[in-house]
Image 1 (tube, rainbow, N blue to C red):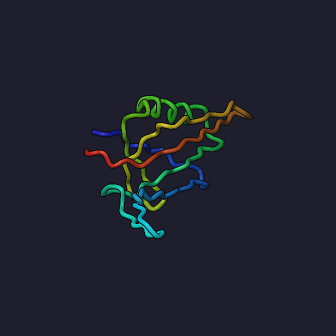
Image 2: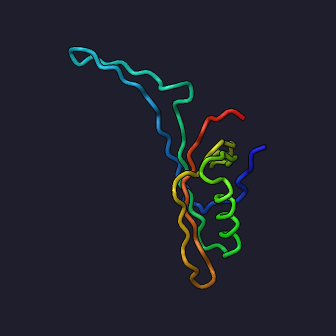
Image 3: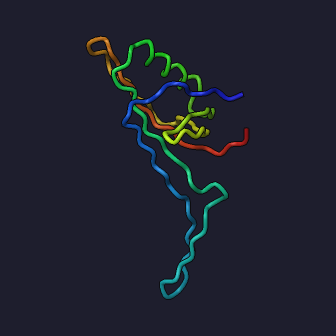
Length: 114
């Protein structure tokens, strides 16, 4: 069973939706577009966990490290829907300042079978 990411990001979470489209170009400037696969709308979530305790950031870091950039896990987006995501891009931690730490990461939606 897949893991669930349970931490709530800071209020500045961004969601980007990128359609995957195949374009066939023909003569005289004519082109035709079609979805590239059955799941051609994937979301990317840019998350920040600002001014958190070192223990909380360490727990998030351990969770992401456990996934190793290849295992998908459940994440609840801003709309309340659970989606399958991976974190295969680098995540960044800040050094402690006044006893708090921050972490930023990017989750990419995947459509793997369960």
